[in-house]
Length: 329
Figure 1 (cartoon, rainbow, N blue to C red):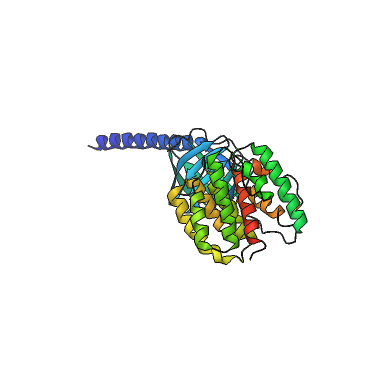
Figure 2: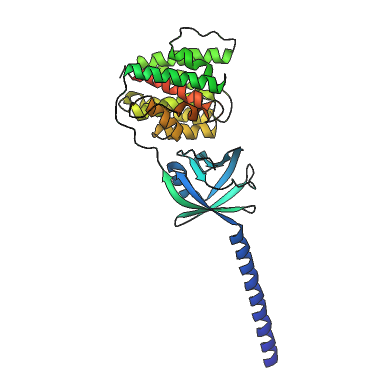
């Protein structure tokens, strides 16, 4: 009996040792599979990841992955150097093993997020949290502003080459009465946008909401042109015309329409604009149109790189905000 106990103990000890080795080997394999990345988080991307235990890969582009977090919001994991409220800017290659609809678990430890599934694991070191900078002080004359508006409209029209609302930029800046085009969608959009500007000047909230609702989801892509225009308009209003608070309820109602009618990416970006947050390229374009403290340089060029037509579309929204609010508060 005593010998059997010794043999049993030795066998058990050996099994435990072997099991321990296996566990250590598995742990080592997991650690080896973790790619450590220095990361800059947009304000909302950071907050939403803190509140989430899991994300789902929603889509991908050449520059990054869209990840869906709680509330059907979208964050963008990217290795480009453009900061934004929902961007997670990493210094390494995008995780190429993750595909659409993959579920990825999130573990938050100290100054790190670990994103993991059975395909790949990455550890995101929280190096910085980006917020949209405070707006500059200063003033811009009507003459200088018109000059900058026209230059930017010319550049974006050329760079976006008839995409989205790009053909509407110069007619809007020059206050063209009617648009000559065979594109029925563009013609309809033009009339809606012109009526929207008039309704804003008249402070007709009922008409503003009805016209804006027509633009939600209008156009192609992950962020249709109508969505981008309203995002640009709303960000400009919140940043540079905060005293126009009579339109706040309209903006809040629009968010509900965004969530019902258009893409998760669009509704996420519009939600950010409602809180005065936007991609750095949008913020820089907005500021250079409103303050001579900011020199007019490459802002239009940088904005043109945002999406397929999004740069031109969001710029048109800024123009509508300036025309509708600046001299009619």
